[in-house]
Length: 180
Image 1 (tube, rainbow, N blue to C red):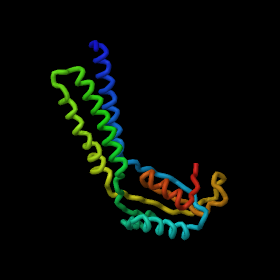
Image 2 (cartoon, rainbow, N blue to C red; image 1 turned 135 degrees about the vertical axis):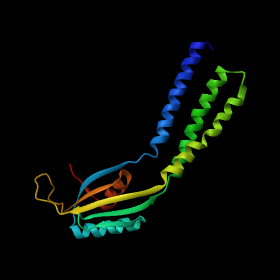
Image 3 (cartoon, rainbow, N blue to C red; image 1 turned 90 degrees about the vertical axis):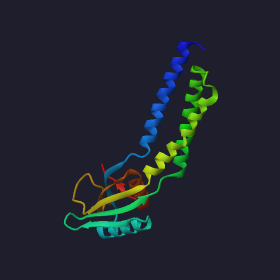
Image 4 (tube, helix red, strand yellow; image 1 turned 180 degrees about the vertical axis):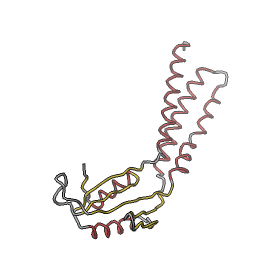
């Protein structure tokens, strides 16, 4: 194999490993968002439904700010075993590719380059240690003001700050209407 081909292959392999590293780091990134949603039931019914929803998901009430009418729940989010396995698998493929390129570049070391693959489980371990954490959900329930941009079926509004996956789960469970 000529030098130009080897260098370009090595460069592309390094770019792939850099992308893999950022993908692994992004798996534990905080994805808290703020949403505003409409609900077809009255404020009291929404508050009761929210309380039941968070109790069912093993959240505990952290604080109740009566002055600003903000309720905060806290719960432990488990890391995903399939994602930890996937990240370790992807890391093993990336390190295998690096080992092959290094075997071609420096054949004197021989198959010892494949020992680099022993670091692949570190990707899953990194995710597992950082993804399991306490999450907070803060929300405020409001009466809708008369507004032409609101649907007539909306009887209450929810302003919520939480992880985007938790908000999606909440929207599916309680059938919220997204507001523009």
